[in-house]
Image 1 (tube, helix red, strand yellow):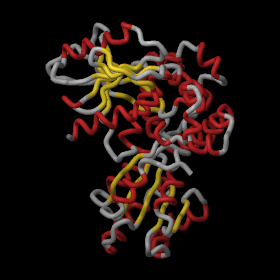
Image 2 (cartoon, rainbow, N blue to C red):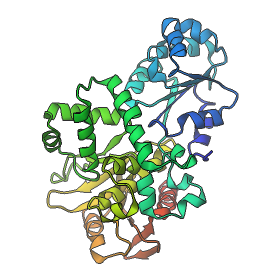
Image 3 (cartoon, one colour):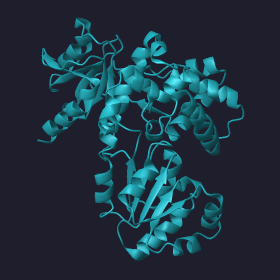
Image 4 (cartoon, rainbow, N blue to C red):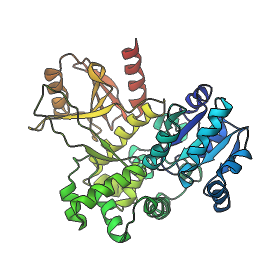
Length: 393
């Protein structure tokens, strides 16, 4: 069992809301977390066909059998149940009554927002973060972590990443996502997902992606939305400033877990990854995903962006909002080079009201250089924690 950062947030919010909703990728540890946080709660798995049939055919009778509430796992499998939950929680007026989990964020959120608005807190659980890893798993190389990814079961059971992600593709992507949208040709869809993996850290170009996959621009857009819904990819939006009209408006594409991206790219060992031209993009993806976990696992909104203008000046990640945003440059090299600071120094000139900057790289030394805090990957969460304390103080 891995100690999850989200657990105390979950327990605290259960005292304030009648329903909690936790969404996240399959295998990210939602069920384990909920059962650990609420050991006295009844557990109901809606993946079970018999259980799902009861919940679907007689929702009132189904809920009457769990008068003290329950953990309802994979709520999207019985989406109409949310409407009947509203009746129960309004009648009971008890906090912490139901804990809902779901692996499809748009589908789950649509039902929840319609039926349980104001009655539920919504949280997201992603795969393990670096700060949640036990010490023995942190000692390996960063390439090994990028290749294996951070799904809890993979590390707990010591599974082979190539096999794990192959199964993940079949059971979690092809089966689950086809429930949301009819994908007629799975081979074309799989090629599309692999092409997405080849574009990690790059600007999303739907026309290029669609052409390479052999599908229309409209289909490419629909499939990107589908992959977002299934917690496979996320889009990092560009920084917007109304007085700066030369900023790009296209988001960047990332995977929630680099292990899955590496699996889709056919990378099976560290030597292959070290030689691959996409290593820089995968390293950037790894760091951005860690920053996202840092916020989501504390019950906070994303508030992440990147900066890029139309002449190529760029900062990989802006952590936070407005003047409190911390510009972070991400470099896959283990040695700091002078050109690593170009984007950060440009950003400081354009936005002098922002203070501080950071560079995350693949090395281990941590120090300050011309006002820029330089940290290795394992120092990222400590950096973000201190930045957040400064913003709140």
